[in-house]
Image 1 (tube, rainbow over the protein chains, first blue to last red):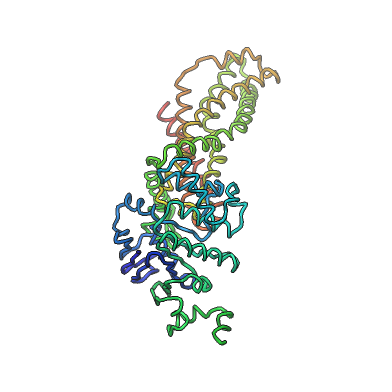
Image 2 (image 1 turned 30 degrees about the horizontal axis):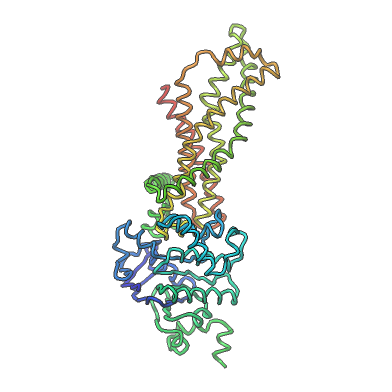
Length: 249
Length: 268
């Protein structure tokens, strides 16, 4: 479980996150939704240690990430898998080498065990036939799947996905969503997904947190989101013409 | 970018700050020192580090061998021809030309000019490679794995170039002198026996130490400064290009500055 307590973040004196407090449950896909610029990526970067929060606590199963020494943080970071918006695959490495990389750097496995694990992860995301290709030779959806395979290579307890569907068509988005959902339940990870895609919310959102202007505006389930009287959330949920059309129906 | 993260990642966004040139310079020097503190760290996986080192030696140094050889041969030949043209005093023996060529090549042309050339070739390569990794979140990916990205990316480049560049400079000296001999032998600038006598005259081993120290220091400057600028990149492709240019310009400037300092230390 990940617990955030009264988190504040400023950039050049400007408040980006204001008093965020919430919990993300284990074995569930926890979605953070909000408009672009609402602060959800900053929140995720605070959670994974790329940004330092000015105030507040982040507890990973009661271990306070904010107050940890740098070395302890690095150890805890090895329990995290991160899927970046663009995949962040290493260009100079093949698909398999990308998945092998965290295993080489951070595990005590021998070479054959590492190979087995990398092949298993690639098989899990259906990319066993593309392992010798380079990131420049594969599609956007495949890049996301390689990034997922790399992020689960070390059996993480926590999985963070920053807009996993950005730049993907609806069908591929659904494949990625379902893959993340399956892996979350298979490995009982605490998964946090940043998105503004309502399809993802309806497909895999077990808990949904709505961030607006740097504040946690609303929290609930995907079923509750459609019947809320929160104006800001409604204007976000029904922003698209398609959603408005459905609402009218 | 917040202050804490900036220090941690080695860059600062100063777009909103009004800073004068001196403040910017001092801030860059401070950030460079902080980054170097992060870079000099024990590698997480020694076997992987060795592999990185071999790759970097190949990419940064061995790939420069051909162009450095060509530059050195032509440089030696041109210095021989020019020296012969400029020294027309009948009181000076002909072998003096060989002596002047040797001193020019050993003391300045091979270590300094070749290093400035390498600042362009290697410096832009390092800055654009790391800069691209930075803007495509590959550096963030390393950080979130609990890996010291600065050390992982920059240290192998510094060690590889500091190890191999002195070797490149020795090759450059040899080929420069060979180029001078070629000018004598094939263009008839002076008798080649006189040239050989000249390059063997008044030899002091201190000159070679001086050239090697310069090669080592310049290699460190090129790789660390270019790594710094690459690591400082934020934004997109345009910024990658800008930081590559900054890497080449600042490395070249620092080479000239340290050339003066080292010369003063050795001969001052």
